[in-house]
Length: 81
Image 1 (tube, rainbow, N blue to C red):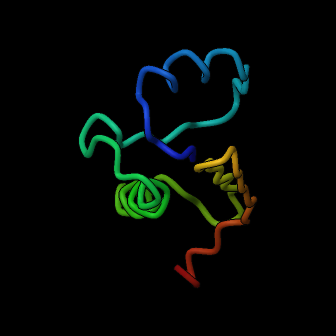
Image 2 (tube, rainbow, N blue to C red):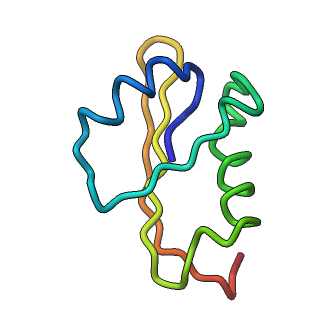
């Protein structure tokens, strides 16, 4: 689940990652650039659409001003959502 500031950039980046078994959830087309809110907004949207099963790994990655970056990998637990 990437930070979604730029849909064009994501369209170019995602094929280069070659993560064939991964699913990418995008909301930039519906909500445009929501800045720091793009990851929780997309996480909620994907969850509401039943995108995650117990035990799925969810990678969230973001970047910000000054080339700051952050990422986390979590194991989804539907009982705790």
